[in-house]
Length: 192
Image (cartoon, rainbow, N blue to C red; front, side, top):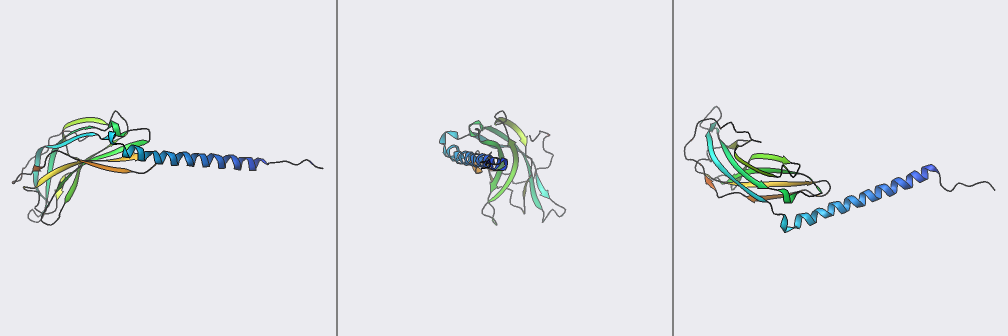
């Protein structure tokens, strides 16, 4: 009788690659499920405080000043410690500050003023005082004068594997915008 080979090299490579892919997939599933533990852990509540420091420029925007939009430039005070949110499965945090207010036409208007990407624990604790908004507060119409503006701090947790989680925390007490326009340029403070 002739010599029989039990397995060829191709069969051995196929078995090895199948076992490897199966183990990597199982490990990725366990990793993705572990994000729920971190998401539901109540000890991970970060410290966040955000408020409007001052309104530097507030006026009409556009060629036709009667029908144009209102635009405001403000400075913010941001104090946050987001280190409890960073763990071994977090790739980065996307954080942003939004201003919300009500108008006659819209129940809630919300505008993003500032954003930042955090990719390390060193960046996760910060205190910015008098930082200018990256994006102007623009409203279509004449709704910003005397409006009560409430700031919110939002963060989006982006894991290496698993679901994205979105959270927000209210800032300081609402601020009433001026009743008259303010002309001038915002202070040249970097927006980080």
